[in-house]
Length: 251
Length: 251
Image 1 (cartoon, rainbow over the protein chains, first blue to last red):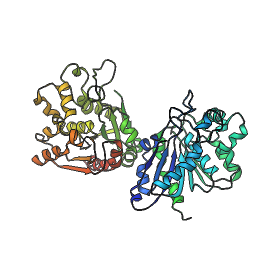
Image 2 (cartoon, one colour; image 1 turned 30 degrees about the vertical axis):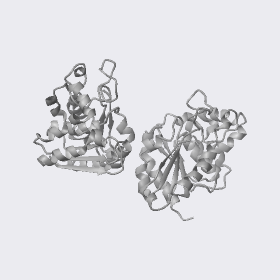
Image 3 (tube, each protein chain N blue to C red; image 1 turned 120 degrees about the horizontal axis):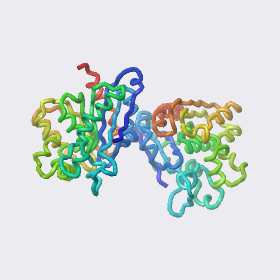
């Protein structure tokens, strides 16, 4: 697995908190660090940024036709179905193996925030919701909030988790919201001109799920913005401020 | 020809000045707008950014083997040698045709700054030096300052301009510095860890040429930085401040 790490200048003097960034379909560990312009804000705030790849890689890793399944499309879950279950254990990697590695080999504290885009927005939400206490803060850009209900999610979950939709609930942010005890506030930015808004993203489902149980959500629909990294670059500054408020709180 | 334009929010209310950005070898109009993180600063300052391609394009345009000649490697000059002279008129395009188009079809003033990277740094310097009065400000990242003296420049100039090295002087920043009347201040950022520093860039030649005639130059060697867009993203903010001071001056 390859991953990208940005160390701010402050990390030369002391351990720093970490924002984990999960990218979307077709991406790898390069997209965020090349196109989001986030290093400026990481440097200002003194926070490490870690961007993993979006799936296992390698010649012996299962793959399939289509950009939305297999390599580049790991959906940040632990697959249970062959052939995927052999390598597609992205949740275990993102929530456990990678933070353990980062906190051992880099000047990082265990104060963690998590964010992501599209499939990675789903990944950030689900990873925070499934792991109470592990993250101090969570946000997303243009997330897939209800994968069980939309084509991208149904295709991936059927392949990785099987036909039993009960098993999908543990990987669906809108389902998880109903059951979690930890009410970690969620920030979501969503472009109002996003070409996937109605078919794949449907942020109103997350609003409804949060309203139903009183889960704190700040959902911002940004008129005219699309699904691209230009959208992310326009608002990533506000996500860093949001995360840093919580990362800097004393436990 | 394709080019990229960023319009800041201020352009909805009034005409804005323009920074032209010239990219380096192998690039097109996308590199700067995707990777430099400059929109943030253009928005802050109320300046339009225009990024042209680096060469003519199309099936009928001459090309050759190698990333440093032909398409993607126009060197911002007007070629005189066949087959290049048919389409490779990048200086005329960048200094005349493109600004005329921008100032007609976009809410732009005629207050122009020019900057660029590597081959595009050469392009920015040469374009400003050759066109006194047309630019209010010029800067460069990691520019080829003396193309007549280094492999990239010698190869391109031999192809585009022919064997007569006298003809090269009109396209070589260090040669032009000696003869120009307009002493437009130059800002240059150069990575001290740039892999092309000694072989292709040699910024000390520009320092010597400026010192010899008293041309104002602020040459900053940035230790540890390489030739990448990460370097540009790290210091582009300072170039915008530099350009805006002059773009905002009343004539």
